[in-house]
Length: 147
Image (cartoon, rainbow, N blue to C red; front, side, top):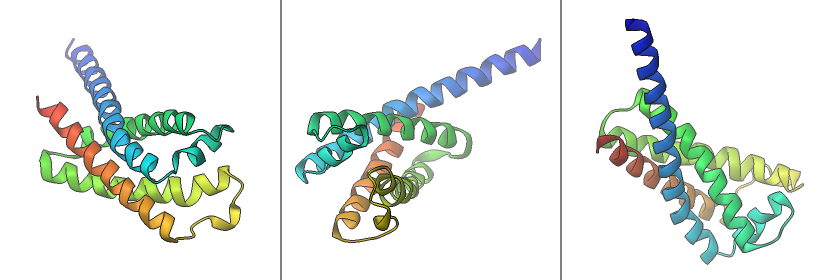
């Protein structure tokens, strides 16, 4: 009987972590998305699905943000405690997402293989946005978990 309760409790905890992570990722994605819109970067994100459109790019960006938020939620719920750890982890996570997404996956998916792991002015701006994404995602996540 105790095992069933523990299993149900773990499932609820995992579900809450994913839900809170998605919400936090959407919050971080919204802030980063506004920055991307101001820099004219959303049409390039739209090209990931073959549509050079700011609106499509924003939708794709938000879907990606929700996914990475869910992953952050799973990791943070399991390993982090408190505001400081979660915010620092959010910044580190944003940097990891930048490397995976902006420096590797984006160039590969857009057929710009020669740009993989290349860093120029656009990539530095992207890094700043990803750090803000991670910081906001971490902040929203810990706030949701503590209320």
